[in-house]
Length: 403
Ligand code: PLP
Image (tube, rainbow, N blue to C red; front, side, top):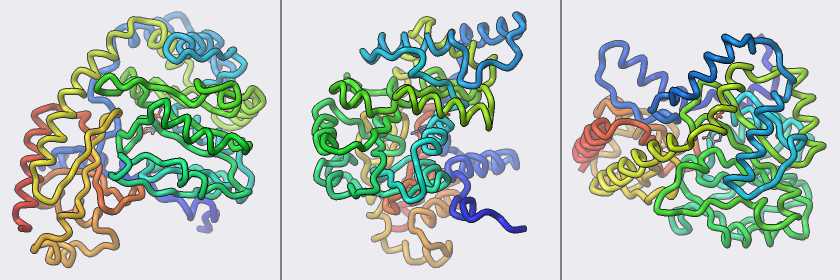
């Protein structure tokens, strides 16, 4: 069957694929430890579930406005004022079917064929695909450990062309955990000052940060920056609500209106029950976030220290999110690597290493090449301390065999 050329450019999400593979091996009784998952391993808090059950009982089970109920838009506006010192009216806010959908919609509304979006690499796997689906061109700019995986202003300057339509910032980042300080953001914004480039700020990991990191957004820097920033966020990671599919976005009213037009002709409203649950999440007791980040803080230390104790592996401390992104190029230099790469034929070293770990160590990680770096792998530490201890021990033993 003929498939559209747009879709021929897109591959399935590798993070979902790794999780599915680990689950299918587990279902066959194979003891696999999965580090693939991009979701908190905590249950959704009870007060949020109760709000959803109440919504069902109250009959809030019908279509809502395509861009979401006004109560949720107001809860989002109040959240921006409370947590981010940002004032938006409800007409500058839209509710989407997850943060992924917010980005997808925004790309569809902003981009014409050939328009470029600057994406710092390593990047979340879905950004380039969603730019391509909208007919745009992802412009990938590499960063590495030397800058803590952060883009520096000259790199941004050099990436700008007359076709640049938008610049993406994902802080804290999936997969690197890098997070930009206010002054780092200001230096990047200075480069944009004389342009009309939009900023897309994907803040989905905003609430998961470590070591007293102070989260800031480009919209906080000046009126000009606020006018051109689109803030994307959602309830998935903050409230352990990945399955409920609620994301939201704030920014220029004319663009927000068009996102809602698009949504009205595609998905219609995000699930009504999930919207009411999200009102409860955003307006209720926020202590549940601290409980989660407390556990992530402990696990971050455990996973980073254990990874760094393996010769050939080098892991920076993530400033936010719940991923470790260790460099593994030292493994490629080990004596036994040639035999491994011969056995697991493949184009990419990080995929070969991933296959080796799955077979040899029964550990599932995500190859860095999916995020734009073949010298890394990603491990989610949204899993138990026990899994982290056992999983990293197994990785260490598998690497030891290559010495
Ligand atoms: N942005 C980033 C960087 C992510 O890692 C994810 C999920 O993994 C999302 C956005 C979207 O999350 P959701 O669609 O579940 O709200």
